[in-house]
Structures are given as C-alpha cells and as structure tokens.
Image (cartoon, rainbow, N blue to C red):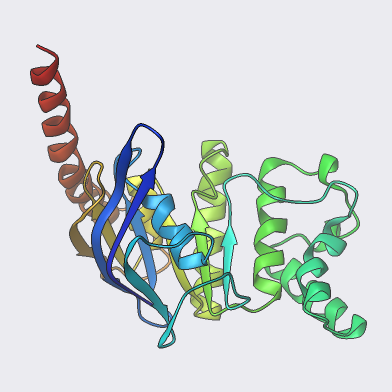
Amino acid sequence: MALRGVSRHFQTRRHNTLAVDNISLSVNEGEFVCIVGPSGCGKSTLLNIVAGLDHPTGGQAVFDGRRIEKPGRERIVVFQEPALYPWLNVRANVELGLKIASIRRSERKTLADRYISLVNLRRFEKAYVHELSGGMKQRAQLARALAVEPRMLLMDEPFAALDAQTRDVLQQEFQEITTRLRTTVIFVTHNVREAVILADRVVVMTPAPGRLKTEIAIPLPRPRGPDSHAVVDLAARVRAELQHDIYAAQAAEDSYAI
C-alpha cells in the first residue's frame, strides 16, 4: 500500500480546512504500522482514505498497484466501537461478511469457528452482544474482520475505550494473532506505549494540518510486554517527538490569542 502526496481538504460554506497535507507513506506486505499524532491531525482521515471510505483531494492512495477508489474485501476496517448487530449472536456476526461475499454455508461455519477460536471466544459463539463484555465485543469484531481473510487490517483506536487491564490482554493476544497470520496492519492510536508494543514501525504526525514528521523503527522481538525497559525507552522517544510539536502548537495559539 502506498500514499503518494496525499492531501485532504474539507470545504464548508465558510471554511476550507486542510486536514492532511502531502503525506507519502508505504506499507509493506506483512508489516504492522502504527500512526500516532495529536488529536485532529488527520490519522482517521488517512485510514478512511486507505479503506476507500474517503478520497484525497490531492495525490493518490494505491493498493497492489491500483488506485484505491472504493472499499474492498482485501482492506477491512476495525473501529473503536464494535459495529456488531445486537439481534445476531457471535457466530452469526462473524459469518456476516462471509455471507455478503456469497461464501457457502458450510465454509462460512468453518471459517467463523476458526477465527472465533483464534480470538479466544470459543465458548461464546452463541452469545448475543448484550451478554458480552467490552473486550469480548472487540474480539468478536476482530474475528469478523479476520474471517474474510483480508490482506490488510485498518484499525481505528480499537482498544481505546477498554479498561487498562483488558487493553493489556488484547494487546498481547493481538501480537500473537498478527505474528501468526502475517496480516498487514495499519493501526491508529493515541497510546504511545501501545504503538511500541504492537508495531514494526511507528509513524508520527504533526498537529493539523497533519504531515508526516518522522518514522521510528521498533526492532524488538515479540512478544513485547508493556513494562519492558526497551518498550519504555522507545515509547519515551516517540512521546518526545509528539510533545515538541504539541507544545509548539499550544505556544503559537497562546501568542495569537495575546
């Protein structure tokens, strides 16, 4: 996947807002890339462009040599809030994308069971959404995304709404899943340590309009724990890159206000 000079303007009757500006970024097959940056810097906008849910006003997004113009089964989005249907049980939710893709019923069941097991929901395949905890809902959403066997997962802060303990558990489980499947992942997060735990590479964006500030390789073996010295040190490096721009932007706003 490649972004080539991607910019995105949003036009209203009164304003023309530049959300992201001239972003060029390549993600290799099987690579796990985390995008971090201040609130409002365009992280989710970039994810939507790669998903085909939005289009750049400048530059282009390319997947497998072809321009991205619409959503595709090879690029699946996992949102912060689990988009599960409450009238369906876990298995039916996981099978839904397969049903839309006209996969045979017997094959749907096989694939659903495989990925329900992979995300540790094997005893809950008949449970409904209201019977699941927040972590279980995210596991179910992840199983549904994985069941269609996409080449790329696009994840928009999927663990942000979870309590700290559940988030730590899912970070460890997700490391194991992505290491096993070698799925390409673009993962948006505000949590710097989460980015270092999960990613092969962390992309740091500037405050709005979002530009690519720097990329930091994470050459650590997996599994990675949140309290390992190497993770803490690299997280501090990423955080320093972020804080410099955040403080500079705040100082500029304060100066303008005066």
